[in-house]
Length: 170
Image (cartoon, rainbow, N blue to C red; front, side, top):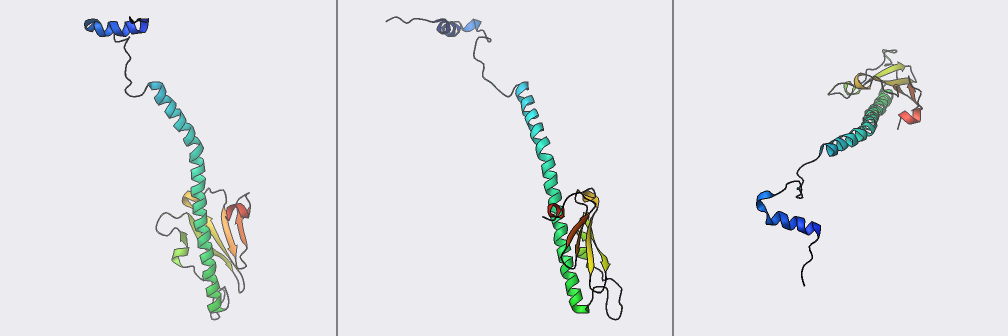
């Protein structure tokens, strides 16, 4: 049975038969690399993803730094309770009343070995009460939670923020 040649078959047949006059526009060109449109599309997608993910990442990092300050406040609270057990008061000793104890150096700036993000202070101390504060500094100076506080009863607080204590102390 004779073979019927369709126009596409003729085109391929003629290109193969006529090696000297090969038309490069008619041949199927293999693709190597990316087109400009494909690269621009990838850049746009990466821009959108980074615009969404970057602020979320920064908030997550700030929440981690805040958790570090909260842990330091709780450790300072333990220090104050040990001090009370040893001295019988929060505001000094029986011999030198009214002089607030100094927090250990590792609790005065958080973190200790790099640029501080929080400074811990014993704000007020009386015979039976105290208030510890963690004030944001440096990279955390404009944190939305502001200054964190903790007293002898374990009451958590914050100043300089419109957020609730539950939002910032988690």
